[in-house]
Image (cartoon, rainbow, N blue to C red; front, side, top):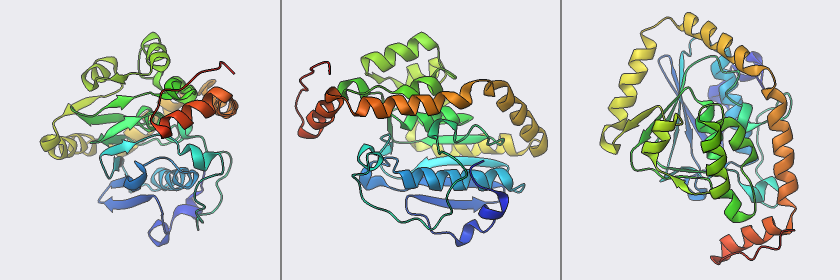
Length: 273
C-alpha cells in the first residue's frame, strides 16, 4: 500500500479534489468526480485513489469497494498535459505516497473485492482501473476505446493489465488497431464480468454486493491475498518499465503530431520519427 494505516485512519477529515468517498456499512464507494474533464486521470487523482484504496485495505470494517464515475465518460485515461507538467497546478493536502504511484498496480494489493460500475464510456488508461477491479458491471451501451496509436502513442501499461484478464492476441490487436470494442465482445473476452441495462444497473450492483457481503470477509480477504501473491512474480517491475516507455513515446514527433491533430480535429501526418 502507498499509505499506512495511521496516515489514512482519518479519511473523513481529508479534502479531495477529484474523487468523492462515501462509506455505507461495510462498503466504501469511490466516485471519480471530474466530469468536466471526462474524468481524465490527473496526478492528484492517482494520489487520491492510492490514499482511499490504502484506507480500504487497512480498515477491517470495509469488506467491499465500488468504483463509479460522474458524467457520461467513466474515464478518458491519463491527463497527458498534467503528466507533462503543463496542466493546472493542484495543491493536495494528502501526505506524499511511499514510493512511485503506478496506476496499473493500484488495486493489486487491495485484498478485498472491488466492483467497477461502468455507466459511461472508457478510453485509454481508464482500462487500468477496470482491469484492476475484481468485477466490472457495465451498461450494454458504453463505448470502450483504445485510440492511442491514432495519436502517435501506444497503451503500454494498459496492454499488460488487459493481458491479465483477456486473451493476449485479442489485446495486442486492439492496441494496434485502436478501435472501439463492443461491450458485449468485452464481456465475451473477460474484460467485463457483468452486463446490465442502464435502468437496471443499480439493482444489479446491489444484488452483486449482497451476494459478496453474505460471505466471510476474512476468508475472502485471505483468498484475495493468496491470489495477489500468485500474480505478483514479475508484474511489479512491468509497470515502471512500461510507464517509462510511454514517457519516451511522448517525446517523439509522431506523438506530438498525433496529439495536435486530435485537438485540431484533423488527420495526423506521420513522419515515423
